[in-house]
Image (tube, rainbow over all chains, first blue to last red; front, side, top):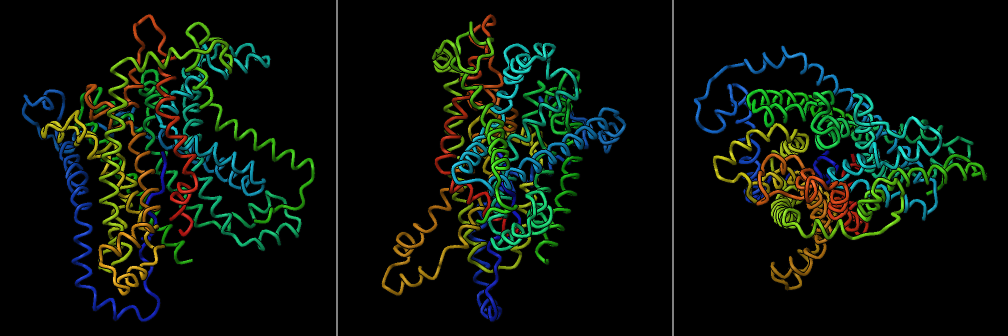
Length: 323
Length: 281
């Protein structure tokens, strides 16, 4: 399931004019109450997030394998060796490039499908619009594991509907075509599934944005004889720029972190790990190969990359707020 | 809203409805296909027919008769419910502070919750695995409930504070002036106004917990706490001679359909929850 990440402080609307002196008077007591209300959530986050994060950094500096995890062998501090090993590993770079290209394809796909459908939904009557939304919400709510399984079965070599239909329309060679064997075909299939479960969020967000465009603007465009495509490019996209930037960066962050689909659909990263992305790579190193140190190093690298994207997101956000 | 893009000609209308149909097919066919597979007999499983030629409930009977699946279902429901309840209570308290109180560092708080929402969960899996094994939480309900609370809190706080901002809090004061006690003012005036937002948040958090795969895969090892998504990925059928496709399909339907039905039932609220912040951007 994909959900919006926090954008701006929802409660941050400051009282208009003359609020400042009152605020100053209340500040000290407000702070005490606020701390009281925030404490439980803060405690959970500190224990479950801050401390493990610290642990992650520590593990990545040790030679931490099966022997150490089971408690017997002493810990061996290796400094930055895990990182050096990782950066010297050709596979890491392959996986990194794969992750970026895969995420880019998924992002472009979900944005194109999501925006297109939002425009479609704003143009059709009530009943087809309801059908669109119900279908989209169904895809959105399907658990990732179930969704991945469904897509696998749909494209199955023996009993898949897709091969059956393709063979039925005369493509005889497609009858026993394997969609999960070839590296790029397999990535394409997983990307189609990821787009399937992530376009609904883009669609719902952008549709709400289109609804917020004043009707007379769109009417004026219609009166001037603009085609839907022209209206989209000339009116909707410029007016919803901030919204689209947010949706894009959120999609980048999600699709960079895809785990379940790759894990389930390519059976843990494909034949000989050809379909690995960083997330699954970290999992395989840590849990399948018991290289917890190396797995942690990959985790640190991923956290760093996502941190950079997030900072870009915050800057884009600030830009939107100002305009 | 006015339709844009000029007057609708018949051909254009046809094109739009064709496109519309295609999209609905793209979104719906996978779900319908798995339902179809789940009702097929082993003999007709490979026939590629969209509508089963022989209907059977055998797949459902077989998964519901294994403790493996029933236990996973119980784990999924219990863990998701408890995690949702705790996350919503903690989230409500924090969201109340953010929506109603002025205090320094509020923007920092927003930055922190943003970071949590962006955080790659995989990074926390190894350290959590270590910590939980030391504390004896590995492969227990709390061992999953805790990370679920952690990663759903930003979502809960965010959605709730967006809803809370819309509540006319002056009503509380008005009720007190009319002689209501603080407790009464809260229960009779504020609680009914806040309930829809809390409810929406609870649905979103529940779906998040219910759908999780990564934590359930790494932080459990036995039936004791394994949830359905992981059990599903381990499914092999009753014996090695039996094709598990039918059972997997039935299990996928069991975990998917209730969620889809709930989402469709509450779709208005969920759409409101998903767009509450994004549009204001």
